[in-house]
Each structure stands twice: as C-alpha cells, then as structure tokens.
Length: 116
Figure 1 (tube, rainbow, N blue to C red):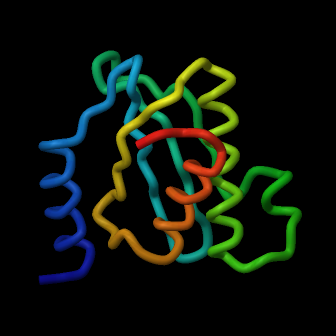
Figure 2 (figure 1 turned 90 degrees about the horizontal axis):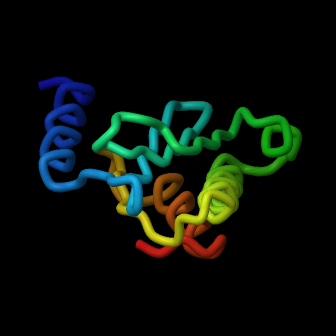
C-alpha cells in the first residue's frame, strides 16, 4: 500500500472522531514537502474561519528552517484565532505523525494562546 493511501486512511480515522464547531473549531494542518498550512475550520457550517501558511509574506521572508517556519505558522494562526475571539480548538494532524513540523505548529499555537 502506498504512503499516500495509508495517510488518507489515517486522515479518515482521525476525522471520524475530530470535528470542529463555530465555538471550538478544528485546527487542520497540511504539510507538503516545502510548505506547511494551517486552517481553523467550523465543520458544522463547512467554513474556514482563519488560515495561515509558510507562504504568507511575513513568514516566507524569514530565512529559517522549515520547522521554525512551522512554529511561526502556529503562532500566526493563534493570533488570528484570538482576534476572532476563539480560545480553544481541536487539533487535526491530517494523517501525519505528531512529530517535527506538525508538532511545531501545535507548539506555536499553544504559545500563541490557543488551548487544545
């Protein structure tokens, strides 16, 4: 079985348990080889409340490692969430291991003031 198919199965398994609401959105993380993206999603209304990525101008301009950029993405999404009046969320690792860049996003979001 291919890596992508395996990750997709894990994603579906996570999504069975994890769903976001308007009050407690889902913090979804997508990691590509070069970039990382985070979204706060309200699954009840199927809308993205806020998003941040390593392609944002202020983050992309910094010459740091991908893991450090991931932490900055976490802090950016936390700032946007707090600006929207959200204090808590549920974390969705998107089928990736909670390790490395995905973990860095979570730590950055926690340091930014999000609770999960």
